[in-house]
Length: 226
Ligand code: DC
Image (tube, rainbow, N blue to C red; front, side, top):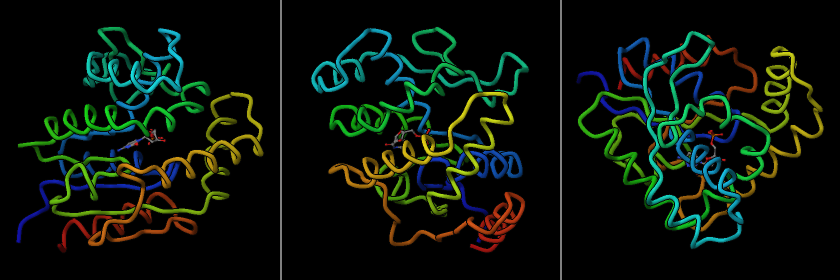
C-alpha cells in the first residue's frame, strides 16, 4: 500500500496539532491545511464588524459571505502562511486573546459549520494534504486515509502555551491560560454539531510525556506503515 494521501489530525486546543501537521506536511511534500484558521478569521471578521457574538443569524450570514484565503508566506516573520480576510492580512490578528475568547462560541453555529466544512472539503479534494482541526476525521473528511488524534492533558497544554507566550516576550498569566483552555475544551467537545471527539478509526497519540520530535517520529511510523 502507498502513502496516505489525506492525513487528518484532530485534537484539543494547544495540543501541538499544527506543529505536528506542518512538520509532517514538509516531510511528505504535502499541502498543510490548518482549519482552525478559518474559524479564527471568521471570528475576527465578526469582531471587526462589532457583531454580537450571540447573534447566530448575523454570524451565519457573515460565514457565507466572508472571503478567507490561506496563501504561502509573503513575509519572513515566523508565519507559516498568509491569512487574508477579504484581502486584508490578518495572519497575526487571528491569534489575539480576543479571538481566542470568542472563537469556540462562533464555531458552534450550524450555518458557520456548514460554510466552513464546504470550503474545507473543496481545499482538501484532489490534494495530498495534511488537514488539522477538531472534526476532520469525524465529519469533514471521514474517509481520510490516516487519522491521528493528538491529545494531552489540559495542564500540560496550558504549560506549553504559557511558555510560548513568555518566550515571545508577551505577558502571560498561567491560571488565565489554563482557564481559557479549559473553557474552549468544554465548548468544543460539548457542542451539538461536529463536537471534538476521537474518530472510531483514529490512532490516539498522547503527548504529555513526549517531545515534538517524539510525536513526529510516532506519526511518521503511522504514515509509512498504514
Ligand atoms: O485549532 P485552533 O485553536 O486554531 O482552533 C480554533 C477554534 O476553531 C477551536 O476552538 C474550535 C474551532 N475549530 C472547529 O470547531 N473545527 C475545526 N475543524 C477547527 C477549529
